[in-house]
Image (cartoon, rainbow, N blue to C red; front, side):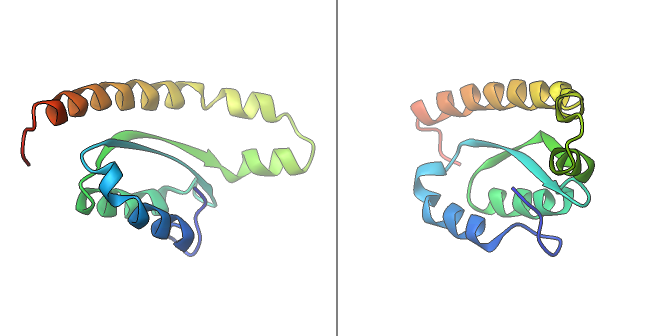
Length: 112
């Protein structure tokens, strides 16, 4: 997601609200970009995710503005993106772990 005015885009918030019933008690990870890598919008969405009964994982991928600028200016985007491999793998590993745990909980009808 992008970061606009220190927060997530309104269209993303609307989309999340729309699919609320389908996403209850499921894990969610974040990939963001922006002037600070989108960290402020991710922080807002983490708080909102909890209220919507999502389980936000700690790991995230924050794409710095320099990577986006490299793309637009013909720079070495592959090298810049390679630096995100480790955070991306950590996020995917955490997301899969939490997905399996929450899936088992839903299968057992464990109430919150």
